[in-house]
Amino acid sequence: MPTRRSAAVVFRLVIYFAAAWGIVSTLAQGLFPGAPIVVLVLAVYTTIPVLVFARWQRWPFYPGAAFRLLVIRPFWYAQILLPLVSIAGLIGIAIGLVFDFPIVVGQIFAFPTFIVATGVLLLGYIGSRRLVVRHVEFDVPNLPAGFDGLRIAQISDLHVGPHTRRRFLERVVRATQELAPDLIAVTGDLVDDRAEDVAVYAKRLRALDAPLGVYMIPGNHDVYAGWDDVERALRAEGLGTVLVNEAKFLHRGSDTIALVGTGDPAGGTRGASRVAPDVSRALEDVPNDVTVIAFAHDATLWPALAVRGVALTLSGHAQWDQFALPKLGWSLASPFLDRAISAHVDRNALLYVSPGTGYWGIPFRLGASPEVTLVTLRVASVAAARVHPTRAA
Image 1 (cartoon, one colour):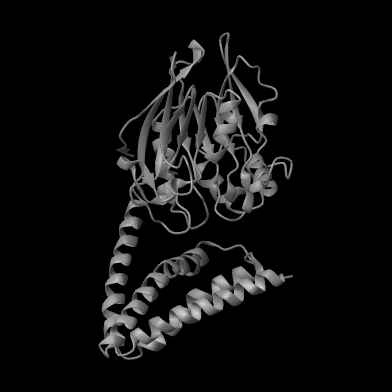
Image 2 (cartoon, rainbow, N blue to C red):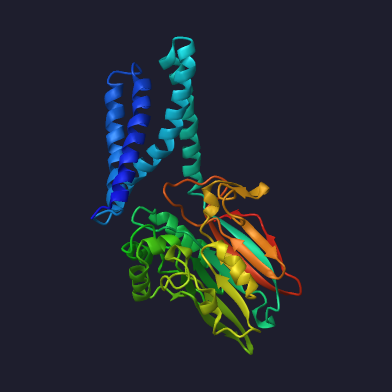
């Protein structure tokens, strides 16, 4: 049953949408015959889905490809454009009142805003289809000689659902396999919103394979989708090894390293659920002298892993917020996260934050191209990272 809190959220959303669409409708008057009616139809079409979702906090059915493409995606585009256009229009109206031309000046402010924002969204759509491969080399102190040159292919934040382009996922598989990695790490957010999305993931990505295995960990969206059901489906499909606060040992001759997968903070604090991150539990069976490579979807877990002696952590989650200026080491996530982009070194601990391989919400990426990362480990006395330029996949 909907809660009183969700009803309050819906009420606030109704007020916001009424005000924003009211401004747009006012500015649309006179642009072309029936313009206010067109605005009303768009408002209803793109607003009802969010009100329904906000009220019940879940779709009462499995949203297939058509629903996600024709209902959810237009909603997302509308919610990005609506505040920009309505605020620009409101500013123009306020200035126009001084000159007795509020609507005209409002249109002069709002229309260029709409054109520029739409152009940026179009560029972001094109960018979301530009799959790249990046090679990152890590010098790892105390790495056993038998694992010098170990190659890990990292995929992250695919957010697979029935709307995900089949050809794009085929390119991801092909690019990954062409790297000939020793092992593959899928560092969370495998699926988009529902446990049923695992079936799509399995169908498109089953071909992923490496000599030392494919390893998967939960991300926040996997938790939102219902981790118990997601994990059950992943294991049933036989897609690889699922690591949740546990370790897997790899052996080459007499040398050993440990692969550790964490839970995700979306599962709550330690002990709140089985999928909540528990670094102590993940490392409890790992001897102190064994080099550890950790997979942690959320890079905020890195300090806890580093202080426990984890040599290298591979993360995702931030997706560089799908908009970044890599040369400046900045992304939209940077104001909110200490480590939101690329490689980091702290004493002998190393971290790589992937920009992600898919996208969330809408197909939009600028400066944060969807990436398959090839991580190569090198024996060294001092920790260091070398991030090479990307190449088209």
